[in-house]
Length: 338
Ligand code: TRP
Image (cartoon, rainbow, N blue to C red; front, side):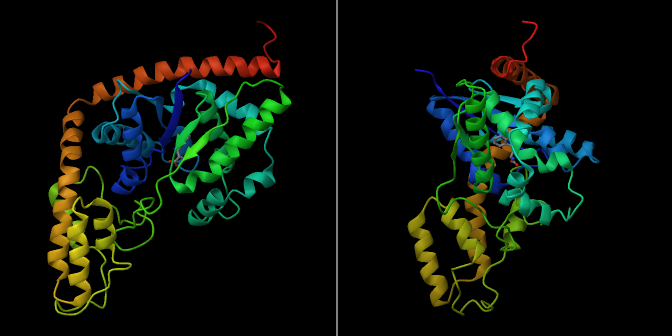
């Protein structure tokens, strides 16, 4: 039996934070370690350019940061193929064929793209490449015949779009060339980590993130600044646990959940101060992040070696994607000269 194939990735628009770690990186490493998958991890620099065309320097710098984050969390180039989107020309050509299988109105209904257009204040000035990135993402997935795509909940519409394109392609061109992918989403409750300020989303633009690369001091300071219960003014006041970001993080990260339950009880009764609670969270996070941070520092000592890993991964990915493109061209019938 053929192995299952995983394809997933990230836009290099900045360093990755602990929201990425909880939402997807952790799961990718676990899937990698099962040995049941051919795993492809793509740094989506072309997709990042769809809304950053005027800031290529940012993408270039972030490419290395993201690669370091990957290696630091335990993605292993011996087990997973880590590669760069722009190094795989077949992806652009697949995208071109798929664009004809999707309507403008179908793309307009994509809720994630819709939300992003609002967030980025594009209004009517939406770059065409940005508008069609769900199609390009279908090229990314299908080029590797990936059947498994581990992503955050916000990527669900992209998987649905990919499945539709695959079905159209296979119906129209009469061949079982493309594989319909399945999304793998984070378990309920662990999907999205709120920002330090209690905002539902941790993100660079909101300036409320803890990065995998933050040093111990920065981590501590960020935890100390976290949003708790604004009405919990004195230590002896009863405090609220729901919507209290410190507890949300403890739910996700603390190994000793019995202790967390005790702390919640104490906090609600009154008598547990925010500073003490935050010190505990800071220790919990430090334990989880220290090994990631030190691996990251180690890898960062030799940046040419990182480019080397990406180049080797891209060479391997190129072979696979070129083969799929060949089959796609044959199915459509544009292989006149073969
Ligand atoms: N859209 C993803 C993100 O913003 C990145 C990505 C590009 C991706 N192509 C993909 C994810 C293909 C999964 C599959 O992080």
